Length: 467
Image 1 (cartoon, helix red, strand yellow):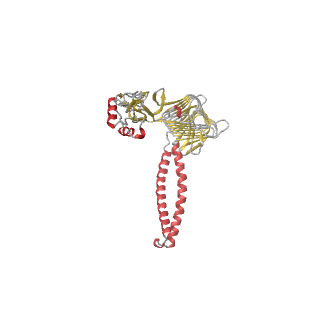
Image 2 (tube, one colour; image 1 turned 90 degrees about the horizontal axis):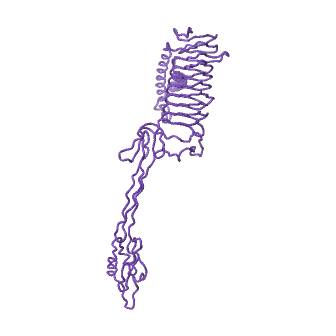
């Protein structure tokens, strides 16, 4: 639109419809040879009401002869800057970022690891919110304000087991657990539920809290929990490790791969070809068959069947079943009176002690040979001198290690002697082929015996009647 009256046809000021730009046209001189002056232009701009974004240098350019008759922009408004919407940054994987197999640097795909769990600790930051901004006010060339659009807000929504700070800019977990986004709410659960089986659909499970599996744990998969693990189905050749209890409604069938480890107790209907370790008790309802069990407490089989046949059963306190062994004289080894972890430690110490003594004997022979040579250290080359010093240091360190090993061996052997409360019970029958160890004493069952228990008496394993 033309907002000025021509000054004797010398110039024209035009403003765009949106009022964001003003333009100047200097008319070429007519017959009277007159051309608009700077003062005339400035007055025309002022008369038009243009006050914002005036560009004096552009006005001077428009007055140059080469620009006569052409439109020159001499003022520009400043557009408003709309506010930014609130932003939420999540510090855990969202559903669309989960569920795919992991690929390593070499491109190998691990279909057992799908990364479905977001483990978090109490106090951990889960999400941050940057509040919306008001935006920046703009102006048109007449100096009128142009109001911006305020940014849209997006608030943090609190689900269970989380807390939001006073400024509503951060959300934290209040427990150890699994964080997820349920709708728009951030939720932390202390229990991770697997609705079906642990298999290729879920991948391995590694959770900071308790895990509940509605189905089975398939062969080759791994479930690890910082709390308890409860399986409503079976464990089939899988690796299962819980800091707390492992509770299996079905049975545990290990094959050659599976291993179940619990910091506390293990409970199952049966165990077959399984490797089970528990810091506390192992409680089996029906049968233990050809399995390796280690319990820091006791091993008990409690139903009317209640059989232990084959394998190696180790417990600190007691092993109890209705039937030990089988009519086929299946070798069944039962060891009580010693914490299985300490028994393993003892055997490892004996093996390592033997190896280190051999090394120490060889070093001793080399050092004695050097002494017999009569050569003093001063006459050795720098390399041989360094080698000799290194040998002496190694010998000294080995001697210290062996001394500590000997002390621990003595401690463990003393512990093995304190087995007076350990016992093995056959509530119905024990068959030939059963070998019972209490501490370091051994009893081999050569004939079928009924309703009996085996205890330590004056350094020997003795059998007594339960009736």
